[in-house]
Amino acid sequence: MNERAPTLSEVAEHAGVSLATASRALNGSTRTVNPELRERVLASAVALGYSANLQAQAVARGTSNVVALVVGDIADPYFAAIASGVVRVADERGLVVTISATGPYVGDASVEREKSALTALRGQRPRAVVLASSRVVGAPTSELPSRRVAVIGGGASEFATIDVDNRGGAAALATELRALGYRDFAILAGPEELVTVRDRVEGFRSVVPSSSVIHAEFSREGAERATADLLASGERPECIFAVSDVMALGVMAALRKAGIAPGTEIAVAGFDDIPLVADVTPALTSVALPLADIGARALDLALSGHTDASASTAAAAQVRLRASTPRR
Image (cartoon, rainbow, N blue to C red; front, top):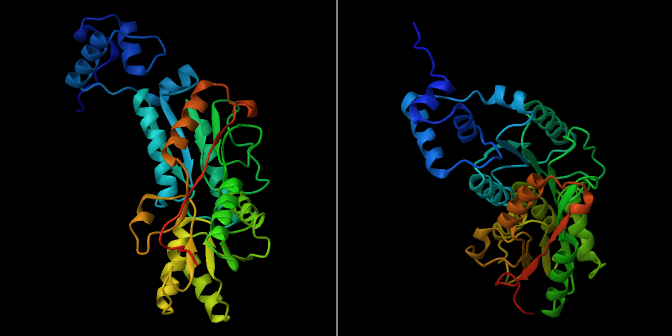
């Protein structure tokens, strides 16, 4: 026979506190519990093997102690950095993060996976939702709950948004590259229906309208294949701008396989400034985004409850010139 599970009343009695205090300490009430009492309750819960029924609590309160983060490919350093910021704020507030990953973008299938994830999250009654997956131009957001939502990167104008300056960052990069003497550019872009891709391409071409644009799978492998095809066509641009650092690494790999030295024969630039790009050879020129800070700010915004479009804020981008784009 299974041993009976301890009750909340037994935890309260063991800790020498009222039932209400034990409940507030364990269930994340917004009412403050004395730190000493909270530690006693937590110690008693561990000693007795008490486990809260989180689903029942969520139904009773209409919410839970869980915050939900929806990202694209969690293996992508861009999304991983955003997630680190969300987790940091959640930890500071005693909340738990659940992460739903829609996977690398593959068109309509990715949109459907995002819709399914959001529908499932509604049933879990999360305290807040941060949406950081690759947004599609014009994609519906009806699956999102009506409050405590923050969207990173645009594509959902009815919700509070952390607006990433993709256009401005790409335009600043193009300006810096022209100042270094580059004139002939190719832009290696992901699928054109993605908001991020559209904004970065348009920002770069606002400075260099003659840049050719090649759309490829939004991944390192997709960029490597597209670069190989570009080289096979006989084109040799002075500089290839990839709309993400992960894609830029694919560009560099394709150049090396073709016997072309990145940064020496063809310059390469990326976007996002993920941590490893300063350590590759040559170090990659990129546009820095405060990704962890963006994740933290998004969760703060979602938890604030002021999550209509008027509560949106901006995240600036900054060009980081490195050895992959030497002066011509």
